[in-house]
Length: 240
Image (cartoon, rainbow, N blue to C red; front, side):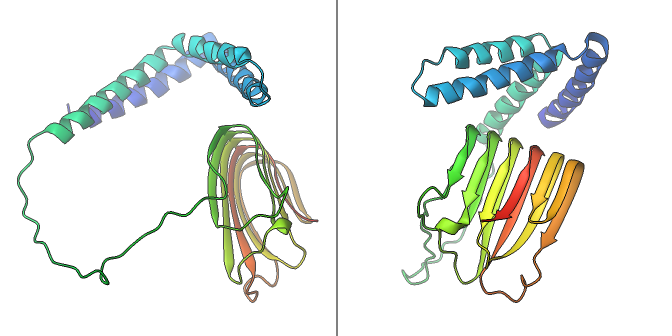
């Protein structure tokens, strides 16, 4: 059996075993891991406030102990080890020599790219915010595991074209404030949560995709496209 096939079967087996463990033993592993993740979140907040990371390590220990009680975790770990070493083997294996013809390029023909500073950085835990002071707008694509994201577009100057804002997260709320004269297109995907987009409100939405657009979006030269994805949390797009 090839390594990739073995990894695939191990992951499928792990999923079946995990479901069987929940049916037989209850949701103890999920509850323990959830409590641990919540304690890690609290510990991160205390750490950012300059306090000792005792709570953070307690949360990590609870999550680790919860996972160690699950046989499915060992199957996933085994699959990861097999996949890792199979990649090392593929990279070190003898490969046929391939001839690639080279063509001289003048300096004007060479395509140059330049790194741009991002408005946000990805965050595993904690809040993300922009709008407490004036900032330069850059198209944004960010993701986070746990925490709230707050973005106020009143404190920046958007370009005379379509601006793009993408936010993906697992747990937490997203709040975006847009100017009154700004046309908006919102594409939101949620597993469970509530949605408030101007006058459009939905509570307890379950596994939905919502696409809303203001009336003058297509004709406006200054507009913003908002794409959000949340597993559990609230989306709020308002004008202030």
